[in-house]
Structures are given as structure tokens and as C-alpha cells.
Image (cartoon, rainbow, N blue to C red; front, top):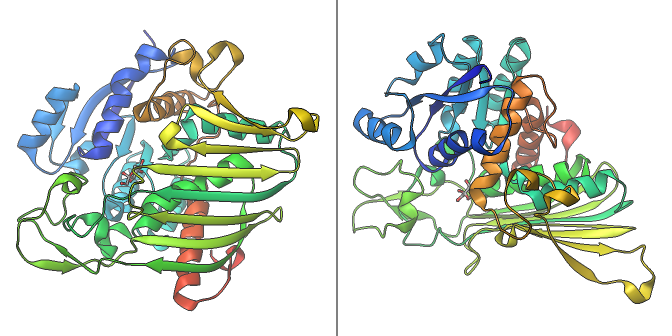
Length: 398
Ligand code: SOE
């Protein structure tokens, strides 16, 4: 049995579940250089945390994350909490000499994200990771590989859409609608994935952001008794009549951008695209070929080969599940066309994090704090572009 890797997770809501599931399953499907051990779960309410820990197989449970990060037995601290506490938790874990994984976006503000990157640079023994989990959807990882192999050639267009519809007027107040906690709404929660995916697949970086519009359609939301800071569970709940609070984030965002290569990019993210449930879509069009990814059909990649004889050209649907064909991560899972799901991107990421901690190369690039900070700078450029109705160069955002 490889040397154990003791994990301490902070958070037991939606991402607490996806991360717990990843650690519970990763060693069953991947041969790893270290054996992940679900050591301690830390979350706010001790009784609920003990119940969650027992259900998911955490050895210990605590309501004191500060104590957990100081535990000398812990090797990796994983932050699955709301954006406004990422900085304090990451700085404490880095100061304690731990490896640190953190949910996206890096933080609720650019300043907090910068402090995290600076602390990570100083913590020479610590590796850092950010859960941009969609990089490890096999179809998106294949798109990255096709671009890297030169199969698309010069990139002309990038289109990133992240379309959800859960935040209608009946959805009560959650931390995700509070600017002080979330930093932003659809921009940091959804568009951060699209910005990261555009950088990941093209290998390019943003040069200028143009013409952003941040829109808040629903200005006030009902506060459910005792759950104003609640999580996604509020999505399903229909608010009982009680007091209202102001939503201080965007429900939707649109912007265009130019990439350093000259490619033209357009982005849209919204929580009010009626009928779209988790429409995380990326389209890349190049001189020699094009790809289209839609998370709602996550095992498929649409591919257009512009180098074929014209009579043979057309969109083809690649079922990215063939391990024998070298499809990313497919070898670890099931036979071709036996589909995997949302949770598998997190399990694939857990495998790559364990490999990286052991000094091995992840299958596709794994964002650390410094990489995720580039995405955070784009979020800031979009915010400034919307506020000033201007174009914002990334070189102006430090
Ligand atoms: C938003 O509702 C959300 O939960 C994001 O926060 C996640 O990152 C995304 O994977 C699913 O949608």
C-alpha cells in the first residue's frame, strides 16, 4: 500500500459532497503513488458535520477548521467553502506547511486572491490546486489535446456560454447572491469556468476585455429563516413569506475579448436562461478544424476536420470514452460508451492532485493558485469593463 496522504476537507455542502466522493473513490479507479485517506472533515455545525463524516467515511469530524489545519497528521487541506473564506483558510493551511486545494474561483476579490498567490509562492514545500473540475471532463481534455497537436491550426473564434436557470424570483437569499461573500454572481460562479476552459483548451491568454455588461434582474430575494447564508439547497426550496434582502451580484454577464494570439472571444453566463440547467458550452473555431463541447452532453465532443476533402467535411460526434483510443481518463472508467458523469471530473482531478503531490505529471494541466489568479484577473477586467463601460487590457490588472 503506497504511503498515505491524509486529507482534511473544509466544507460539507455541495462541493463538500463532490470532493468527499472524489476521495472516497479515486483509489478504486486509479493506481496512485500515495493512498488518499479521508482524515478530518471540518464544517460549521458539529452535529451535522459528524453525521456527514460518518456517511461519507471521514475518520474525524470537527467544527474547528483552524485546529484541523494545524494537525501535523494532515498533508493536504481542501477548501470547499464559500469564496469569502478561501483566503483565510488557504493562508492558514499554507502557513502550517500543508498542500492546499481550493474551490473556484480562487477568492471573492482580486486582493484576496493575490494574497493567496503570494503566500503560495513563499510556501516552497506546498503544492496548490484549484478545482476547475471541467478540465477533467474527458471531452474537454481531448479538445485541449487536439489544439495542442495543432489540429485546429490558427484559432479565430472562442465562444464560452454557461447557462443555468435556477435563480428565479422564488429562489431565496443564499451566500451566492451576497457580493461581500461571493464577490460576484454568474461571473465568478459560472463564467470563471468558461474563462478557465478557454485558456485551458486554446493554451492562449486574454489580452483585452471589451464591452462587459453585468445584469441583476432580481434585485431582492426572500430570506428563509436562519438560512440567508445557505447553499444550493435553497435552489429547490420555495421561500416562505418573510423579510427580503438585496441581491448584490450579477444574475447574468456578457462580454467580448481578444486573446493574445488575436483570436476573438465572446462569453455569456447566466442563472436565468430558462430551460438551460447546466449548459456549460465551449466552441473553438480554427483554420484547420473546430470543436464544440456542451457539458449537458459531457461525454461527447463535436469535431469538424477542415483538412478533409470538402465532399467529406461535416460535424462528427466523438464519444470520448474509448480508453483503447487514448481518450483522456477513459482507461480508468468503463468500456466505450458506458457514460460517466459530473462527479467523475472531480475524481479525475483528485487523481491528478495526488500524482502531482508525489511529483508526477498530471494528464492535462492542473491549475495552481498562480494559474487560477490569471482567471481571477480576467474576472476583475470584466468587472471594471462593465463599471466603466470601457475596454480593459489585462496588462492593466496586476
Ligand atoms: C453553480 O450553481 C454551480 O454549482 C457552480 O458553482 C459549480 O462550479 C458548477 O460545477 C455547477 O454549478
